[in-house]
Amino acid sequence: MKRTHRCGELRAANVDQAVNIMGWVHRRRDHGGLIFIDLRDRTGLVQVVVDPQHAPAAHAVANEARAEFVLAVRGRVLMREAGRDNPNLATGQVEVHADEIELLNPARPLPFEVNRDVDVDESVRLKYRYLDLRRDRLKRNILVRHRIVKTMRDYLDAHDFTEIETPNLIKSTPEGARDYLVPSRIHPGEFYALPQSPQQMKQLLMVAGLDRYYQLARCFRDEDLRAERQPEFTQLDIEMSFADESDVMELVEGLYTRIAEECSERTLLFKPFQRLPYEEAIRRFGSDKPDMRFGVELVDLSEDVLGTQFNAFASVLASGGQVKAIVAPGWAALSRKETDALIEQAKQFGAKGLVTLGVGDDGETVHGGAAKFLTPDEVKRIIARSQARPSDMLLIVADQPATVADVLGRLRLDVGRRCGLIDDSKLAFVWVTGFPLLEWLPDEGRWHAMHNPFSAPVVMEVEALKAEPGSIGARQYDLACNGYEVGGGSVRIHKAEVQKAVFELLGLSEDEIREQFGHMLEAFEYGAPPHAGIATGLERTVMLMVDEPNIREVMAFPKNQAAMDLLMQAPSPVSPKQLDELHLQLKPD
Image (tube, rainbow, N blue to C red; front, side, top):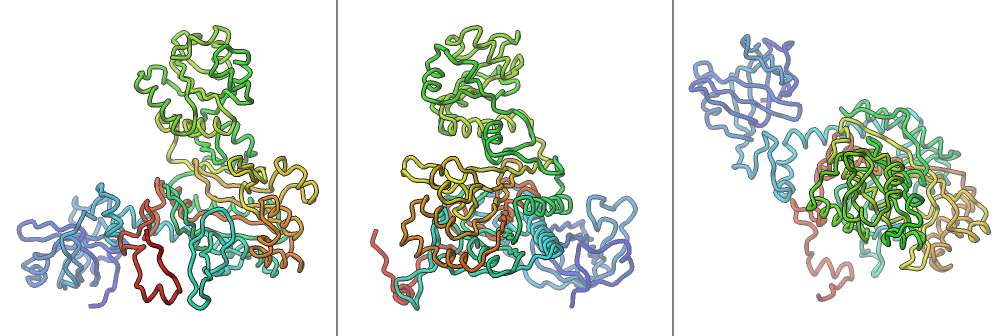
């Protein structure tokens, strides 16, 4: 029997046609004679009716069929009886009356149900991922991912970009995360690295004169995992010659507008996308990837409590810190237990503490543990500055600016969720621009690239760059959406002397620069054009389009939180022979 139609394709136009369909038993119902089977394949499902009078052999097979048995059905498409159609099903007007059924493969009892969305322990889902992917939600996510990839390719092809593959076995160079290393059998004691990104390769393609490059690139980073991070992932990599920030941002904004409108049921909140300088994003939202779907902005109270006798504020201000707050609508009635939980949460985020002040019904007084340390004038100024209303609560953090922003930015997201301020049907894209080029790591006593060491500074003179590295900005731009970083890019350094100066500021010696990046600096001396680019995360993009909280839900075969492949049980030991071939010896624990 050869398949003529797929299950989800049958409609009223197919009535009276003889069809051969194949798929899995989604659901089986025995009505004491007639047997009804919902047969499912990737396209959907259709109802099959098996009449013992009409097709006794087929009925015998259907009688033994159970969930997830694989069947082939030959039959005729008929309209369902009046009143028995299913408006919630694409094939709900028709059914297939079976003439013949062939059992292609039985199925063992399943470790969990796949014909409905039930809670299943993630370790079980990942171990039986091939079953998990049969479920409607996971299957939908994979199909949306396919549509997004196709949209990316079609859009970039229409804009004259060339798709170019770059190697997965490259040189290990310091780019931020820890490399995955691959030992070489042919060159004992030497290693390849799996690429954290194709950053250097795509810049070299610009030196090669290929002008407009893109790639759906596999990237590998040996770092601790979280909800939006996996050890291997895919990014859309784009690079353009003779381009600046506006060229890249305009291109990518058009692409993501199309993706949102064609591949998602969520709608764009801003079109065109909003744009925020980095400093403003941190000042207002405490994050360089702000969720713009709601307000609750950070309020600076430093001037309003200047000269206060409340030591928790005064000591911080004296040391150059800040006192800032967010307003939690309607939280003034929280219990002591609930406010204690908020304080503990702030400490987990890195704060020394959290001051909570509930605004009274009169809108002029506050209550809370710190209220007795504040004068009436200070309270008046705090309420006026924050525009807090009766029954609101002020969450106040006093600390150094970076800590204040991070803690309040994270508490802000919690307030937005718990107060129902976030519209999950919206996508709020925002460009964040004007990042610092470098940041100082006091614990390590060195400069660190805020984005990556290839981002162009706004000042391209080497002496000026070295004179004041901490005050120079980068020609960098990040795309954020709903509190997630979707991607980041920059105008690149294309002059060897500037690139070398940045490497030196990062603490690399002359020998380290030559060993790790000599190929790139040499390439820049052969006529490198000005160029710019960006990389956006495919999994994060899909996650946002289908409103999933975790990128594991949009990958076919992800690793778990411990970077384990539970399906194939990887990583796993290898044989002594394999280690010998690679000239490796395991160190005893």
